[in-house]
Amino acid sequence: MKPFLPPSLDDLERMAQHAWATLPAEFRTLAGDVIFRIEDFADAETLAELGLEDPLDLTGLYTGPDLTERSIMDPAQRAPMVFLYRHAILFEWISHGDVPLDELVEHVLVHEIGHHFGLSDDDMDALSDQAGD
Image (cartoon, rainbow, N blue to C red; front, side):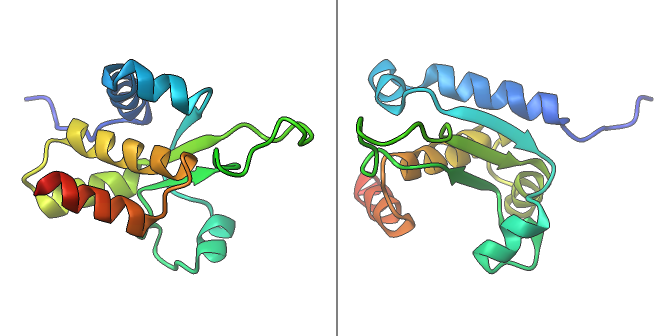
């Protein structure tokens, strides 16, 4: 019997790429050239900046200027990036137990892209609540 192995970084990368590819084309076009990175955990500096002690508390992170802050007059800025943190996503997936992993990866990805559009966590919660009505 082959032992069960948790999804790898490459597995989550494939899930994220698939989730991205299945989003509406208009959304992907508006998002532009966002770079995706899959890592096991957020680094200590990132956690400290966010005031977090437990790396399992951070499933994803958007870095870079959001679209509301960008200007063609600005000097070249770093590329917008979405980080997905494998261990935290797997921990949340196991904790919930009722959400398929690929759906959770998509949820985290879309949430972080929301920050690219300048939406706060409260904005996204409100939109999610409205969509559920």
